[in-house]
Picture (cartoon, rainbow, N blue to C red):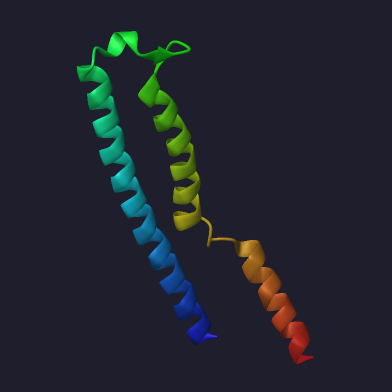
Length: 93
């Protein structure tokens, strides 16, 4: 069981590092997109009243939010742990 928990911790660590890299990429790309929009006469380039980078920022940000949840809260499912323990006890009987 201890080895399995270490594998779980390793998987959690990998997901968190991947999230931080994803966040850094998101911030850098969005910074560049908003700078391009701003310095290329940004007022005239809008889609449905929003600047074009806003669509990418909102869409990608939604995916980033799901990535954050998976990395930091996805493993804290007590119901799964209880179900596992219940099945392990049944198997012993």
